[in-house]
Length: 71
Image (cartoon, rainbow, N blue to C red; front, side, top):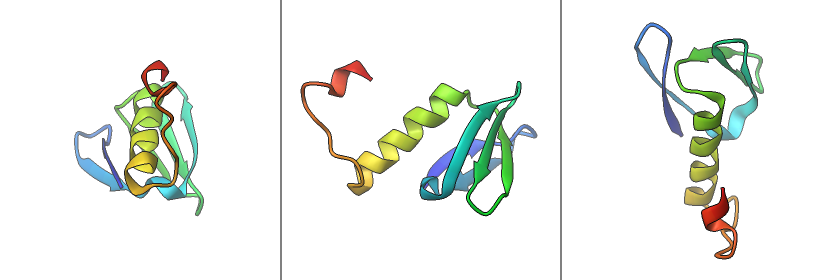
């Protein structure tokens, strides 16, 4: 799960596994696999970083030492 901030300032926790798409339209829009959309204050790059961090934390993505610092 990743914690994000809605445009109205409320915190929302999203299960990163269900994120299908992240867009900047110009607000960052997250579309889940069920079609639900969230508009958040974090940038597209920040959301991507949080998702990658979550995947590593739960073991869905391996971490190679030779490329860890390059992301």
